Image (cartoon, rainbow, N blue to C red; front, side, top):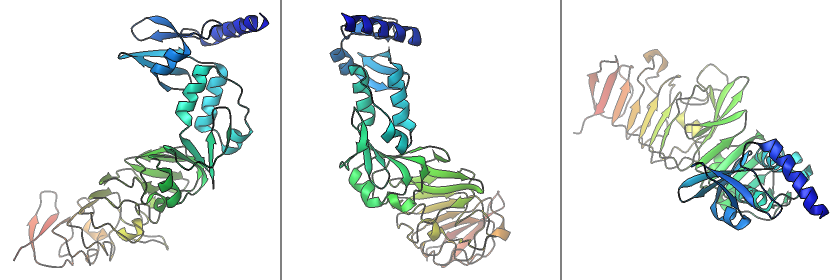
Length: 348
């Protein structure tokens, strides 16, 4: 009886905290769910588990016969969700994990059990606590601090990589992995299938999705990490705001080669490149023998070296404002309305 009285009091407090409905009801373990069609039903743990689709920090999300439903959660559930979604490694290890309702426990288990938190080794949520783990296979890897090796990411089989603020990812860590999605915490952010880092000196391109065949980076960035695109071995088309290590060629450590962005190995699959800004210095496209089309429309001819295309033996078309570029082979020249010239290889 004492237990029933305590539970009733707890449920009442929960109701006051989480009005309006839905809410958990009764001492018999039933839950009240509010459906998008206006219906409210009392559900057992078994029925909730059968139709549980997802969860957020504020509620459990259910679905049945095409109709969505919502179920309220406790304050402890919300606290734990926030911790697992954004807590530091120290916070996760130091936290207590009191018992939740069965449905809440199930929801968090489904949400976070396949997440591997990495900081030189893997940690994981086990439903009743958070600790080191011998597991190596996860659907998502959260890089808490430092870097992670490509071999560890490959073995994990993860398709999502999330970076916390203290992560220090290198683009080469994605080589040969199955990563298809980035998650990011400031100062990192993900956009255009790429990962960026905001710094006091400007925005850096850090990495890109390894399985991308088309990559179009239009973000206003200032720097590129060496090898940021080194995992992108399937690329066919690429749009960049500049070529090399930075948009400005004035720094003493400036490297103006496309190879710099790929860690020296530009993929043979890459056929079309468009560059919208920056400078094209001598040997900008060195080692890019497989590229067939280069578009530099919008870049002033004064920012383009005649020898930027040395080594582009497979070049078929060049769109540029520069007259008489040093390109291998015989090309016909057409003046374009934009003020540029189109150089097209002639077949003899």
